[in-house]
Length: 637
Image (tube, rainbow, N blue to C red; front, side, top):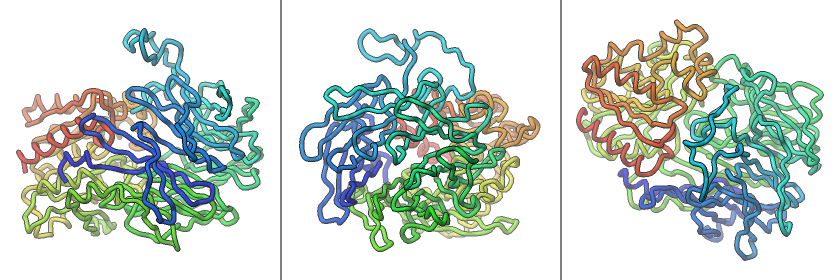
């Protein structure tokens, strides 16, 4: 796979099942290199596989299809170049899509009522004079100053939040002139709407309204007459919710013990009337009902609850019976990741990814996933994708370490790149990883590991490094690297290290503590100093303490910048100007320190990009990044 093959990438998202379970609607996404952007259209495919997938729309800006309860309509989001996505309605018996309503910043979530007469959605309401578009609009640089009085005021990839809170709306999409009604007035920011079975209420989530320092969230019931009732005063984080069939219980995904990082997502229940505190129903050590690769989702169907669960590089759907909340995998366990799913009765459809696929639409048949689409055929036909070779070994203390190798064809010996993921609570696994494919095709063997601190191996595995970053995780990564280097195809004399975010942190750390093992390093969007990260990052005000502890001396001890005097190997630092997760000052401080010491160092800065550059940045920037990475390795490996 060459970097230019990004233009062949196709992947489905947002599957939605028809009410009779016979068809799946989905958005098909693609990279457009010539237009330097991303496009998506709506498609539909029959669950029995009797017909090929059929395209429904062609605007290039359609996403998030939601099937109506009577099966006659698709609600979806349609935007345009530089214009936000608005709620539209598509008749499935023929005809053009119609815009239902218009919001300055578009809509974010779409949910049909059970009777199909109303649609609820969230949309951000901007302060007057901000985020204007069109002729005569005030440019951002001439807006009034922002008065900030809270910690949760911005988010990487989104921007400022306090001046455009998300509100809940409801609309009759079939009215001659639909008039959305705003059901919330509070500026807390609402998300995850779900209809109650009575059709008169919705439940939404928001941050803890009593204490802005708390990481807990709350559930609120919203009546159609605009009454707002608090269901929880919880000590847990609060994510997607679902109702029991009788409407008396609300289930939701969240985590408790919020004083520590690395917590697994569990299933909780609370009475809809709020008469008792939430109860955790699943064991966080055995099950993590989330994954960084998968859409966070909780679906109630046929007396069961369905959620994603990550495990050893895979993501499956698990079914949890309301009467006996013990998770069981849906479908056979395998080398795949379920990135999103939908359910209707006993029918389950999913976006199923593998090491050689960014995702296909699949449906469950006889406990096996049957693939219905072939959207990855263009990439697969034009390239020879290289397999993931599983690696297993032990750290010096006997702890098991798991990972993979992507190796170039031929006997070698090939130069080696140790690639470290972000998080740290995420995992490498069974999904097409364009970076590993491009590097391996260029001749570099890529070692991918899930050391302690990663998700997918139990909560204790994720929490093992808290307060002591750079110790057990470093030991695991080096053990996996040493194990891989026993392969005669790999050259132990030509090894580089790279990573982004936490992976960038660990790259800088290894360059300082284990520099003799590597010829060069590439540190991307890294955390290098926890003291400045605490105040400059959108999440730094809580993430630093959860990960490193509250003691400033302990935070300094876990900062790679504190050991930058030990770095001697050449280092390329890659960062984005608009990264609010790991702000660019983290890169600048390291660059200046190394440059003043005379260490061979270069810094590559991408304008207009945020933390997600390598995954969702402008295609031209992603190609430029690939070129810079391969140029660096060609010079040093």
